[in-house]
Amino acid sequence: MNYFNFFINFIAIFALSWYLILNLQWYNYKLQRVVLNHHKKVWHLFYFILPLLLWIVLKEIYFAPILILYLIALYFWAKKLDRSLVYTKRVQRFFIILTIILIFGYFFASKIYFLFAIFLTILLSNLTEKLMFNFYKKIAKRRLNSIKDLKIVAITASYGKTSIKNFLYHILKNHFNTYKTPRSVNTIAGLVLDVNMDLPSNTQIYIAEAGARVKGDIKTIANFLEPQICVVGTIGEQHIEYFKSLENIQNTKKELLSSKRLEKAFVHKSADAKESLNIDIFPKNLEILDSSLDGIRFSFEINDKKEEFFAPILGSFNAINLSAVILVANYLKIDIKSIKDSLKTLPQVEHRLQKIEANGKVIIDDSFNGNFEGMIEAFNLCKTYSGRKVIITPGLVESTIEANKKIALKIDEVFDFVILTGSLNIEVLSQNINKEKVFILKDKSQMQNILASSTKSGDLILFANDAPNFI
Image (cartoon, rainbow, N blue to C red; front, side, top):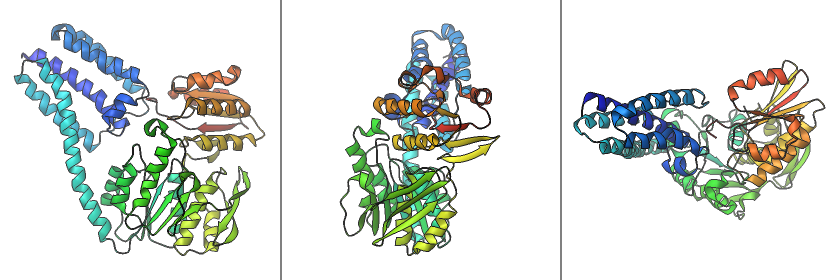
């Protein structure tokens, strides 16, 4: 193979592989999800399938100008993304393997070899990552076992996991050496990395999230952490496209209860679990006393007594999350008065009904809330505001058309100006909202300009859910 042909083939396969690894990173390195569950499959056609077919059928001399056009198109497409490729160690290893395989292509005068290089790279990359992961997982397991008297609290739910974790940390940190997983880390890979890199050796309470996309994900985390205390929060139709039914979601979340060291579990009634000696169904006799832009006041039964609590956070649904937190804290021997005092100083969770006041406008950042019940609650909260109300939303992602229709009807009822983002739900949302108050934002980079020109002092602006533009 001459230098020119080798160069063209090398660049073509490298560019196609770059597109592939970017999509794999978006979908947690699951090829099946990239192929079957991608929200914009048309991108695969224009940036992978079509250029790949042209590369196969055309000689290098004729494909060269097409390759230049493809690289230009790929560059401008990538520039518009709000979630570009992160060059993690895994991605770097992927490109090292790819480069080595492609270099050997110089000695094989065949496009078949270069085509094979993509699949061989994926295979070797996955094998490398699996071997490394198993090695580091064993180290992490030994580290967990080496921390004397460590109590692990594991939390799972369809939504509210991160809020429960942050709320619980706020209460426990004044009584124990407490550590929580960062951000929304909730996969087995993320937990292994967290234990190895960041878990302090003097930790008394380790609070971890457990997330899932398929059956068995939670079971794997339960086997790794073996938590003594488990919380199964509210369960709904989040990620229904992966689990196919609510029953499958319930069963997957309840895998957390299989922990060999389980002492106590607090399970929300939506999980459809049976109460037992070490499994409590919560909340008992929950009553929302007040929910406003100042916070929530609620009561529920604990220790056979009705207790009242207040927290300066938004959303009545958070009473469910807080009741789980209170039950765990009380199980760990923290008295009710101390819990009540801690709740009064509870900080808002970023991007989850977070209230911000700026330039005379009230901004409610609920961009990390992507479930039906939570969005409806946010709308009801905004409804109490007397001024003009504006919403920016892509609707519900990984949910049903019917759920998005209900969301649209509620938006139409509450808001005066509606900015729709993304393409996934544009049709169903725009069909059920008064067209006179709808603006479709095709380029999210223009959001700041649109808000500056279409909102004024005294407005309430709700950011309801957010989705990267590959969704």
